[in-house]
Image 1 (cartoon, helix red, strand yellow):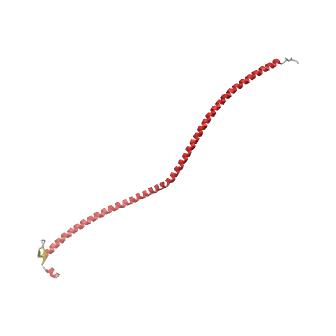
Image 2: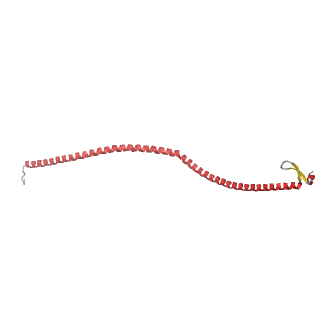
Image 3: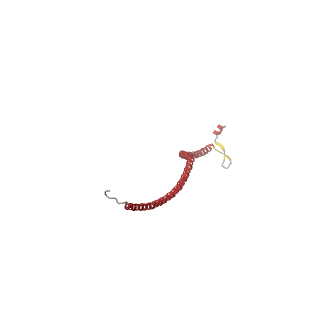
Length: 181
C-alpha cells in the first residue's frame, strides 16, 4: 500500500477551509518541504536565540557566581573579624565582675581613707587648739617669769643694798683696830 501511495501522482488533502480534495504529490511534497524548511529555519532561529540566551544566562550566572563567591569570602572574613571582636568583648566582659569587685574595694578603701582623714583632721583641730592654748600658756608663763625675774632682781638689788648697809653698819660698830696691835 505504501508502495502504491508512493507511486501515485495525486493524494487526498483537506484544504484550509476544511474541504476535502486532491493535489499532485510533488506539490504536497514541495509544500511539506517549504513548510519544513520554514519550520527548520524558525527552529534554527529559535535555537540560535536559545543558545544566545543560554550563553547570556551562563555569563550572567558566572558573574553572579563570582559575586556570590566574593560576597561569601568577604562575609567569611567579616565573620572572623566579628568573632575576634566578640571574643575580645567576652574577655572584657569576663573581667567586668573582677573590675567591679576592685572598684568596690577601692571605694571601701577610699571611704576608710576619708574617714581616717576626717579623724586626722579632727585630731589636728584638737591638737591645733591645744597648741594655741599651750602657746598662750607659754606666753603667760614667760610674762610671769619676766615679772618674777624683775621682782626677784629688785629683791636681790634691795637685799644687796641692805647687805651693803648692814656691812657699813657693822664696820661702823666695830671698834677701830689699831694698826700694830
